[in-house]
Image (cartoon, rainbow, N blue to C red; front, top):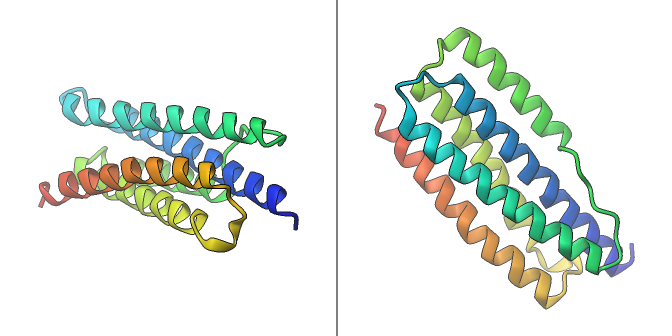
Length: 152
């Protein structure tokens, strides 16, 4: 695969997983009780962060001459369906929702780590963008994990 095509594919994969993250946090927020305004604010922030990530990645794809993906990953769709089932059985339990959010954060962390592998044909500019976004993703993961751990 040509280097530019590979880079566009990597960028589009990150767009899709950011879209999954947006949908996941939106869904998790809806599953919370009204008293959980603290978590709703956290989830809204991370969904907003991923909207910004998707916009930046979309711009990079366009500048590279590619067509921007607008959907979600197949695994993200499966993850959201599992979250729906879990919420039904858990009674919208904070800890259960945070556990699922952490699982989603693990997935996006892995996607960013894999995107930065040397064989993905990314330009220095793309690598810098992804590394910058990765920092925010890692911080989000750690915050969600800390919130989950505080529910013990």
